[in-house]
Image (cartoon, rainbow, N blue to C red; front, top):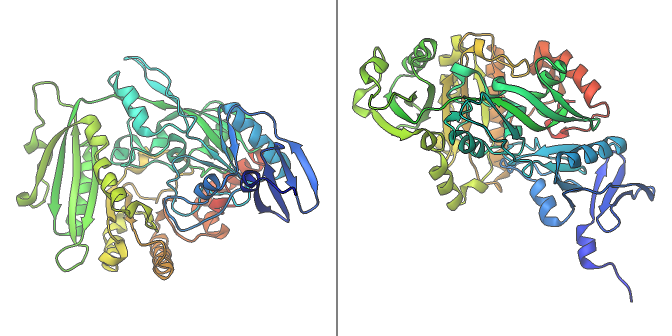
Length: 489
C-alpha cells in the first residue's frame, strides 16, 4: 500500500494567491497551480534554500507584534543576491506576492505575504572591510546594526545615527526611516545612505543613488518595500567617540520638558537627545526624564556639566550622570531586552503607536494622548518615548514629517497578552483615535507601529509624495507583488 511520505506532505505548502491555490513541492522543485492542475515553470537552482516546512512557514506568518498572522507558501533563505533576483523574477512572472523579512520586528504584519514568498535577508549580512580613513561602509541588508557598529568601531568609525535597539536589520530600518536620538543632528538613517543595491519587483538587480536611478533611490528609502527589495546599502561613516557622558534629567511639567528638549536640539548642545515618560504614584503618565548624551571629549578632559546643563529647568535632586563607552551606550537596551525575553514578555503582543507631532502642538497633543493612557494600557515592560527632531535635517521624501521646524516623535510601545483579543482590538482602536487627533493637528504617522490604515489613509499620509511613489510602483513593481502586508496599493 503506497502513501505520500509524511515529510513530503509536511513540506508541501498550500496557500491562496488570487483565485488559484499554489503549492511548492521541494521534491519536484516546482510550484503547481492546483486549482487547474497546470504546473508552473520549474524553479531554477539556488545557492541557498527554499523551505515549506511548518516551522519556517509559521515563523514567517508571525512577527514581533504577534497581532497579524499571514502564512506564506515558502520561505527563501538566499545563499546569494542572485537567489533574490531569481526568485523575485519567478514570482513576478507568476504573480506571487513577495515580502523581505529581516529580524521580523514589524508589529502589524508588514513583512508577511499570504500565500507568497518571504525572503529572509539575514544571510545577506556581510559588512565590507573599512579602514581608518573610510568615509562609508557597504553592508548587506540582513546585517544587524550591532554588527555594523562593531565592524566600524574597530577602525574608530561609526554610522552617525542608530535606532535605540541595535538588533534590527539594515534593510528593515532603511525601509521605514530609522529614527533615533542622533537624528536631530544627522537626520534619519535613510538620510545617511549614499547608495543602495536593490532587486526591483520585476526581478532586476539595480544600483541606485542620488545621481543614478534617482527616482528608484528615493522610492526605496522609507518606501516600505513597495518598489524593490533592499539587498545592500552604502552608509556614511563619521569619527566615533571613545566614551560618552549620559545625562538623565527629571522634570515634573510636560511643557517645560518639551521646551528644554527643543532648546537642546536647536543649539546642538548634545549629540543625542531623547525623552522618557513614566507613570507617577497615582498611575498618571506625568514623570518626564530628558535623556541627553555628550560624545567623545579629548583624552584627559571631561565634559563641562555646567555649560551643557546651563539654563535647563530640571529637578537637580533626581539627576543621574553616567560615563560609558560608546558601544555600551549604543547597546544599552540589551540587558533590558534579555530580561523581557526571560520573563516571556517578548512574546506578548505589541500594538505600538508611533506618531510625529508638530512642535507647535506637541504639548497639547502629547498631553491628551498621555492623559488617556493607563499603566494597564501600556502593559508590563512597555515604554513611552517623546523627543524632538529637526525638520531641515530630514531630507528623505517618503519619510513624512509634520510641517514644523521641530517635530516630536511620540512612541507608546505597548505590550499585552496576545491571547487577549478584546484588549488588542481596544488598543488598536485607541491607536487609531490618537492618530486621527494627531493628523487633524498637522501631524503624521511613523509607520513602524500598529494603526489600522486603508489605501485612502496611505494616499493622505504620503500627500504630495504619493504621485511619485505610485509612478515608481508602476515602473519598478509592475505586477504589484512586493510587500502586500503594508496595504498601500
